[in-house]
Amino acid sequence: MNEISTKIGVNRRRFIMGGIAFLAALHLPKPAGVQTQTGKLYSLGDGYFAVNGWVVKKEDLA
Amino acid sequence: MLHEFLDKPEKKYDFCVCGAGAAGITLAIKLAQKGAHVVLLEGGGLEYSQQSQEIYKYKSVGMPGWLELTRLRYLGGTTNHWTGRSRPFAISDFNAKTINGLPGWPIRKKEIDVYLDEALAILDIRTNNPFVPIENNPELKNFHPAIRAFSDPPTRFGKKYLDHLTKSKNIDLFLNANVVDIRLAENLETVSGVTAKNYGGTATEVRAGNYIVCMGGVENARILLNSDSQIKGGIGNHASLVGACYMDHLNVPMGEFVMDNPPKRMEFYTSDEFVNEKNIGKSNVTFRVVQKVTAYGRTKKIKEFFQKLSCDMGIEDKVQFLVEFNCPGEGVISTLCEQSPDILSRVYLDEERDPLGMRRIVHDWRLNARDKRTIRTIAVDIAKQFAEAGLGRVQLSDFILNDSLDIPVTHHSHHMGTTRMAERPEHGVVDRNCRVFNTKNLYIGGSSIFATAGIVNPTMPLIQFALRLADHLAP
Image 1 (cartoon, rainbow over the protein chains, first blue to last red):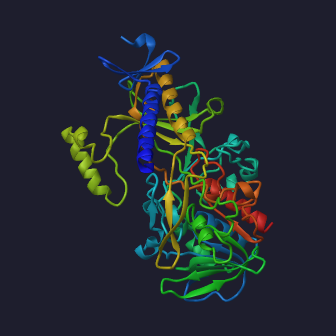
Image 2: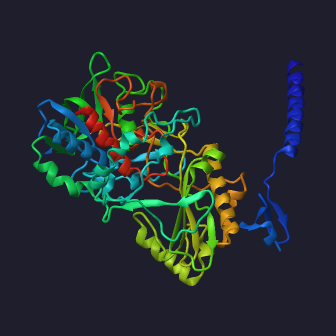
Image 3: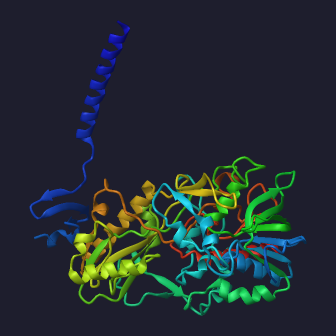
């Protein structure tokens, strides 16, 4: 009886921990890059972007 | 006088200097010039030998540091293959600040500046305005043109000073004399002697009034840790800092660049204002257009042939999974970034012993969060500056932009910090005069005493410190 209870306890804990991990993963910060048709775009602040790694000013983004 | 170690040193000397590299030779000569009797113990011979070099074998569990290839174990030490580049510490390097919970230098720059001209003369660098900024560098906000000076050809201490060491009446130089233990008197504060062994296993004790360990940035820590028969954990290891705070300068392939008519080489220093504002380490960033393929190490010729063939055939992209390299015409960005002291980046003793009975080193070289921030902040900022100034375009590597990727770092062969200098024993291994805390007559010479790394090439500063130590020991 004790053994069955323990197993149920373990499974419940696993389920709860898994749920917490899933929810946490949803809220983890993602890499700042955004995939676009022309490549990966990163905002570097101060009006600069990296397009496929190339660093350009915002006004140079065509 | 020059001796093989089978001639046992019988008399008691004023000073025993362990290790005949840049620091050890400088100290021995300077102390002898002051009239002191010096015994200089060198583990290697007059030339490279596999038997001696084998003592340097170690285990790496962190980032690869190539400690076997980047150090040389014979008279003159690693100056036998250094490039001859010198850069001084800056005033700002000595402004006391706490990094990763560890205080900075306990002294000010002026305390080593008085030895600059003497160090430059030792390194065969002209002393009148030697540090010349790189020419034709464009002006960038947050960065200055880098300065440097060259010994041309690089000073080889063994060749340069062998005759002097041999003829000096005040110096006894013993070759193949490997220091394997530091013995303490009953008070456990005074060194009574060092045990030295030759390769035949003959051991003897060498005695002096004062002892200076100058065996290298890693080996200085190794001998202190190995000398643990009287004090658990080794001599000077009261705060578990012997071997800790291992630093090298960080060489990071930040990316590539294109620009019209680039100068042959552009080299920048971060400004102090920028470094302070961002709370990061300093950096030297180099832009250069590759002229020819280059390779290093024992397999240099094979690698160069392979790389040149790949570049000529235009298939370098296909073979980069084997080894990364650049082809002629490509603009590459490389760095010499300051690594911050951190107790987790360290060397410690392995269970395995070398043929002399010394436990070998485990090398656990690590980056911390501040180091990563230094690399990424500098890369992004200098790329922005390029775009802002209309100089050209910089393409940053993926690992700069994506924080989740590991940063591939290679070494600069500058081994520092493993017996760091501090004001108080809880923060370091040696005091402001390079004396090991809790000892009366044991001192350390070399870059292992560096509290912070700056963006210096360590040879010239460690010579300044050696000259300062000689003046302290024999005023």
